[in-house]
Length: 117
Image (cartoon, rainbow, N blue to C red; front, side):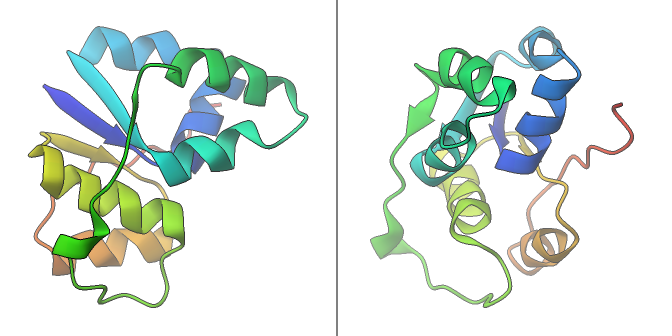
């Protein structure tokens, strides 16, 4: 199974030292470039851990094939949802309340992470 992940869920898993769990659950973990850039820009310890973890998991999203319908989601969330469609992934890992509304519009399956720590 392929998992597309958004930034806040990855940060939470990194803080909990649980990134390895998603590798155990999914054959492949992929993130869009916007999510990668968002999680590595901090000087916090999880930024370095995520930089290492995501090194070969980053994909570019072809934004030309999608119509942007949601003004509430940030760039990383939108790219994650588009990448889900582009890669025909099995699950989308997202925990943002606003972001959960957009996948419903796009008929996406979502996996909501909550209460990890």
